[in-house]
Image (cartoon, rainbow, N blue to C red; front, side, top):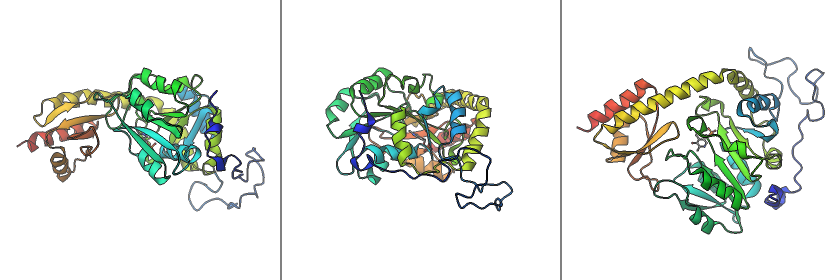
Length: 349
Ligand SMILES: *Cc1c(COP(=O)(O)O)cnc(C)c1O
């Protein structure tokens, strides 16, 4: 049976975590002289003088309702970047353990590994941007702790074959992270439904994309209680600000607005694809399950620079492995997409 404590870095086994001033008293009424807060209030109109809930219980129970994931299986962080970093700090011994990434993929898995002095084994996706499971099996060794699976994948846009992800979950002895930052744009169900089946599964989602809350910095990790107990032990005590917790709790009441925006983005994607296909500079538009297209063009770097001169900013991925001459284009509003297409038409001349 999988036990994350067997993967834990040795020095964390006996860690005594920070105990917050309010760990022993859960009530909201009382004379609070325990946390050296300002008793009068704040210098702002609204009061922020009390420390926020370190475990974000109210917010988690609201998210549990919306996501259909029990609150005990939810971790909230300062963006998805926080759980990514915590997983390294919990399970990967610097200069000893390693992880596997499936390239081309999201850059933070590598950057966070570099910051933590953890070796990254890079396995390339297949020609049609799917997981190369046999190559992953070859790369795995006794010190491999995490396999990063980004699906739908950034920057290619596609979901991987779900049976391949499941085969990793059922055969790999370490942790498989399925990063679903773009799940709201995909048609499939979340891997969060399979938490009970796979104790080594961590699902990442975020409020930064479909929900339109990137500046608030809030990401989610769904995992077993055993994995989350470890993450909670090593996180900063007050990792989500009171402002973020309150704002997101309010925002969750407008979930239907999110659905409407997603529907509009998906409709715009169809139109943008049709328009891009007409252009001479466009060689190939890769299929997407996300809110962006990877587009192979003639002379990506030059196009990118010329677009910037017109204040149209796309992402140049042409230096990324398997992405030569590719730009990553986020689906914008209809007006923004029209401007992009117009600019590309004129640049041809
Ligand atoms: C955008 C993105 C995220 C989100 O990161 P946050 O820190 O939550 O803003 C996570 N994973 C992938 C693959 C992304 O593209």
